[in-house]
Image (cartoon, rainbow, N blue to C red; front, side, top):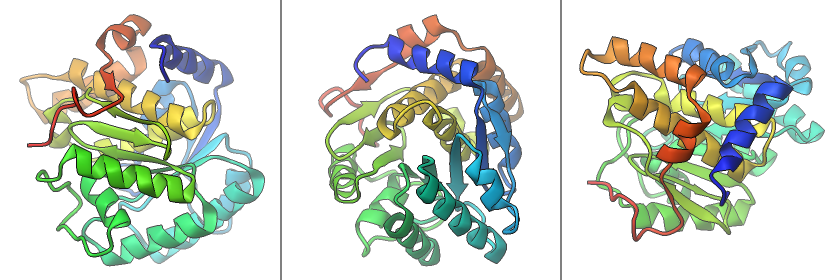
Length: 275
């Protein structure tokens, strides 16, 4: 995505198409994910019963499957949804939340990728490294802040090329690669880490853009838009006000704000390193 106005063109197309976006996500962030999709101009549905997900997925414009809080029912439903998406050519996001520190989720994610070939696989730096390097493990669901951009970018590009998918590694600098192209997105704010579910919201935004774009462009657009909205939502008042501000900006961000504030590099020379 070389032209700055392409993201705004995708935003306008998304609002005009007004697609249905199916999310099977965790109850911790389900409200934020649905509202993010609405703010972008799409229509969310969060059906997760195994007996209904096939019907819902089959009419969706795109799908997000999130491992943030797994249950037997949710895992079964995600496999059903992924199979319908693959069979019907529906693009979907697999958010591998928790795979950096929980071996069970890592194994499930690996099986989903091999069996159903998601369009986008999203995770923070630790989750992406755990997916690429089986000997790596980090505690909890947050990212290991000692990991470096160059290391994650290299292994993400290699993994994306092998499985023919787009990888989105989120962090202080987001990395997006489809195995050939790679870019580094510097938009964002540390305040995003002060409320739960922002990573899930970013994944939901990826799914919304997937309904009108391929994996790479959708991931770039979602990362840029979400990061800029985070910057514009910053407040000294605290986490509650920031959360409200963030949702407000997701629904009111302008073309000019996107065009003037986006920060994308195609190499690490100008990218911000993780400290």
